Image 1 (cartoon, rainbow, N blue to C red):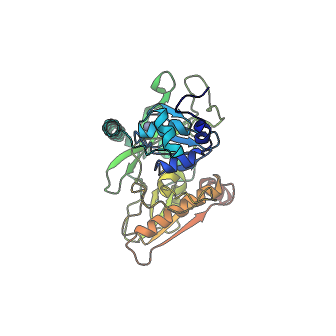
Image 2 (cartoon, rainbow, N blue to C red):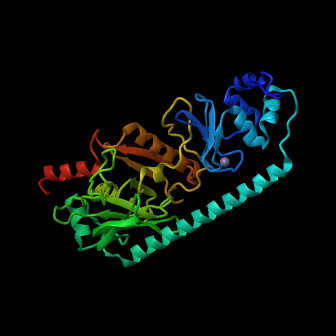
Image 3 (tube, rainbow, N blue to C red):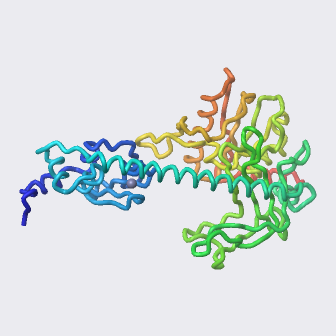
Length: 386
Ligand SMILES: [Zn+2]
């Protein structure tokens, strides 16, 4: 059965690939994510909640709670009915969106975006406040199990204990658990590291829960349901950051005047290089994680990890202006290609922003399959000092 508006054109309209419909509607800014093309919703503007699956010929916005085929997409974007959408797609009439509907949607979308930004800013401020409270509560780490933990891993500080490393003897492991919200999974001794932003302000803390019974070991994390690992089999992490870490570093030594900086991901990696006595005048800062050191990468078709920095990422870590030589330490125990790409991206970004005409960056890699800290421990064992 066909209605008066249908007259066989429905099939014609349905035969148009949905990506072509999207292009005609001027929907842009989509990027590939698996089978889908995702990006800002043309109606609500919601970031990454709008997606088109060309294989299935369907779109979906999780904020607008709308979805369907190409004809539905026309109705959705142009705020029109089925008949007008058909007219639009098979070219029998010009269809302009109803300006009143468009204006109403725009106002709604702007209000939603404002609300989202306010909520995001409030959550960030709360996280930073929490981080500062934790940091102010921490005692200096020297002479505590924090020092024992690092010493057992071959890490000590020739120039004195860093004021950025503290300790809390009974610190709650706060984490989200489905159905219960954010709860303390357990409490225990914890190495607390200050993550400082470029201005030197503490905006996050890096927390490492310790097993004081076994020197050099992190605590075994047990979830509220008694599990030791997530459903994918990955052990629950004994390390967690609270606050806003992007652009921050854990400063194990002062900046100094050498212009040289050595940065690993964690305290153990960076501290191993420091304790080994290479480049004693260099600044040793831990970059917290690869995402922070590398920043956002550009998507380059045909490559999984481009190694090219997305220079629009203004929050990624950058070395201070006085740094002319930057060495990133690459651990061999993580995914080598992905890790290397991220580090390269970070070095490229640093070179781009550096004011030094002779800025140099390079990657120092640990042996395949080993982490710097393992190498350090082995080295000490061979030397008979550990
Ligand atoms: Zn939407």
